[in-house]
Length: 368
Image (tube, rainbow, N blue to C red):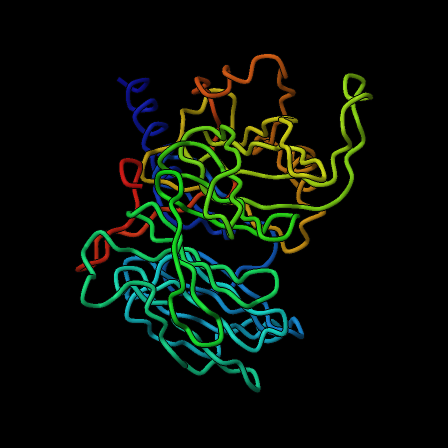
């Protein structure tokens, strides 16, 4: 009887330790049961910070929050570590970008079908114009503006219309819609290519990323990127060729793609003409036996210092103990193995996607 009691107390103690929520050391237990140990100092915000842009002087961070509370933009003073401004948004999801001078910020307006422009002055944001990515008279529940991105010359503003599988092109000066082009299923994240007039777009619904020629409105090529391809980062910088790559064109940049449903980051090397070559897949998670990602989770990678991203991912294994980041070299001759590989790990940047809010329909695995 004493033995049974001891086992019961031990089980109760373990359960208490695994309760979902915050831990005394600043970490947390996720609903999946995985522990999360953030690095660095944490600053309290609202719900689900989805995107971040720094001010020109680096003293402030503009953060888009789009969780179960009404969407908002928060301005964080990075010296005082305090949120100093909050701007309620009618609707928003994922998309936040700024011009090079950081005098104007743009937010994807979700189910409103708009893109909101905000002006930055003296450490504060002021709401400005609203660009109609979708004609209000033709707006339907299928219209949902997610990611936004300025062209390299800042003449055009691209807005991903998620459920219509298209990118809307707006004149950045007038805000007038000048066109649109079709994309792969569920365009999630957009990044400027290393060649002019090109965009890399992740296809949440097709588990791939595509390279687009914007002026022609067509996809040049697509490559697999695991289940539920979400966030992407392009990090310029030459890559030292491997023993099998001596005769291949040199690689001038890395393309990182977060695969939400395989809990991994796929790494492609890009040539000068952006031909992708698969380098490796970085599997992320507490242990080798973790299941694949929950379908309601998204995984993203974002690099403030993009050139350091690959090094940081690989070096975490030396600092995290059981929270390892593992790197796996892939067989270049069998890329199809990656598509069917379901033994991924939990991404270090996992976040729960927002729930339904009125007309807002949060992307999920099926749509997204």
